[in-house]
Length: 70
Image (cartoon, rainbow, N blue to C red; front, side):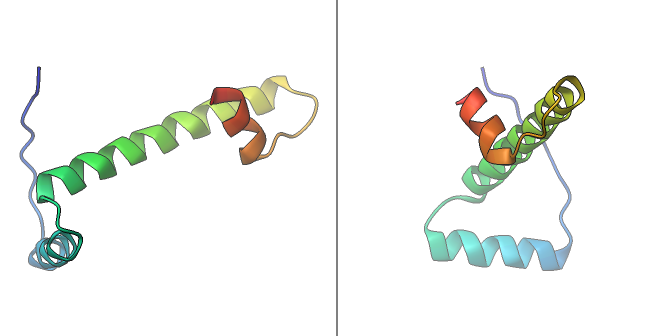
């Protein structure tokens, strides 16, 4: 099931979004959905990394953590 989310954009942000979606040949909805997915993935990745760093006796790099979760 899909939900709809309404957001307000500044005129500058809307113009940038329009230019980028036109250039890349994708819809604004697709670009925004991908941006939200990427943002949430990064947040989850950082939270997991932080948890592992607190438990670990060695420092893991981002690449180490990526390998663990992939």
